[in-house]
Figure 1 (cartoon, rainbow, N blue to C red):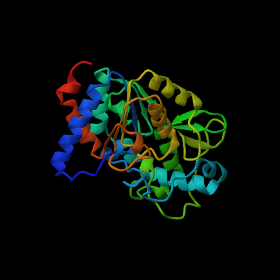
Figure 2 (cartoon, helix red, strand yellow; figure 1 turned 135 degrees about the vertical axis):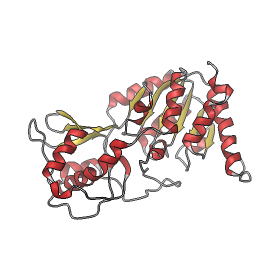
Figure 3 (cartoon, rainbow, N blue to C red; figure 1 turned 120 degrees about the horizontal axis):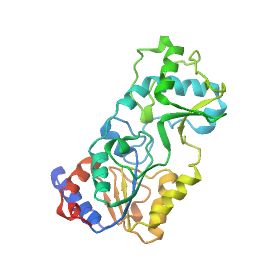
Figure 4 (cartoon, helix red, strand yellow; figure 1 turned 180 degrees about the horizontal axis):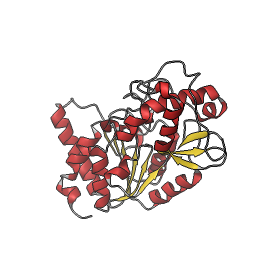
Length: 291
């Protein structure tokens, strides 16, 4: 990546990042975009990792533990009951809006997001693949009957009236840092078959459905550049697409405050605020012109 340069003042760093990304995007016709948790922190949704890619808190609940352990499910849903209202109230920030505007200019082949919050769609993006699913959806692991998270929230609150009004700090993906005994928390079963309900998202330790992966690879094959926004790429589900882009010789830009697992293959790496850079980039003549 070259020798370390003297650090610029924040305003100058931002202007430099804006110009660099505007030039990168302006040279592309069809961008494959991958986004991560750093894209949604401006909407009040905490991310998982620090600037060095390390966990900020305890590692998230894994799929196998959720399925095997009734205690783990109680703990998950108790915390989620507290955290969900804030997740549901989150609104798109400048990063989501900027990427939606980029799509409106017909510069995006597909936006693949590792986030489960639905904020890209709320901002107006239409070509979105929710790689890890949507936290607003719940599914039965036995009969596969779907239900909305909002509806299940009502059932959780009716079954656990003593928990209403509890407050805990927000955690990623609608979780809450609630550290109390949850042995008495009631987890309502599937209303269709009495089976086990789980958020319709890919938990850590589980695999992304093959159809989603295939759709992403198809879009990548029709793209001429890749843009990563707000992802440390510490998990393989997203990193695989950057590696595929690098093998194909596509230019790769990464906009992320901290280090990533793909910094060494990036054509352009910008450690700057996602929303501010995307907003400034769209104001640049090289990007707002029709490709």
